[in-house]
Image (cartoon, rainbow, N blue to C red; front, side, top):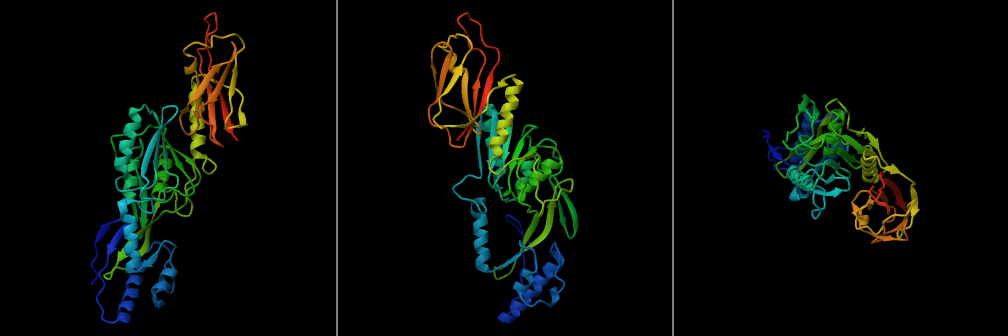
Length: 387
């Protein structure tokens, strides 16, 4: 008789107590029969036509999808240990699952590297801190996030305005609509979510849900396309069958598996953060009626910038140092030294070398005064790329 119950892991797990057999060959035959039963009744995919004629575990599993496999007791024990260690499946244990910092322009940035069980608590803590620092815009980074606990994806989606459905789950029994875990703490309405070719599983559930419901803007590359559900059928001797039992789709039936989620804003690989920060900076500066001038390419890392004015200015004014900023795209304003050079020129030197291949904005704020007390009315900025 089979006894079934569930334990909480990164996937649904079902314990199967197979009948004890004294002879190893009898036990092997019983295991094969059990696996055939699970494939026939739970496998979500094309069941092999000759399933009942198969005589070995390897033969059966080899006819299934790439995510289904049989694990020996030692293999399964190692897998459980890897997944359960501090809830960081396939993740460097010394690296936090959630991290954050402020970007220039009152933009909060939260990186989620895996969907651990305590992820939502960490996200809430980080976002609260960012809001206290003045964040009124938000970027959430799910690049290189291969998934984890689906329940954590449901919790993350509960922070987005307009998300009524988390995802749909299809199994042999039919389709189930899953709701998000609603949170009182909501993200800004125009939140940006970064994804790339390595974003998979729970990350894709989040991306599909947000895109289907216009609840955030997805930025980056098409995601991996891993949208199936695996369950573990564990046997009495400690071995287990990992079996695909269903498929996730977005609330509007957006297909994930083998398709991936195409972003709203497509970016080249590893350019996602710099592109969206550049976009937000330009929008903010345009809103303040700043004018873009020049576009400096292949600037040396130790470049000194020269600002020329069309008339004599009071460049020794104490406020001069507050009116020029060098902004690192994907970061904050970097320290600079400002030195008057005559009466109509300023020399701007970064206090440390700029990053090779990095992008920057040199921003000149309005308010520079001439000797007559008249001030400049319009701000200007120059995009810079370092060679």
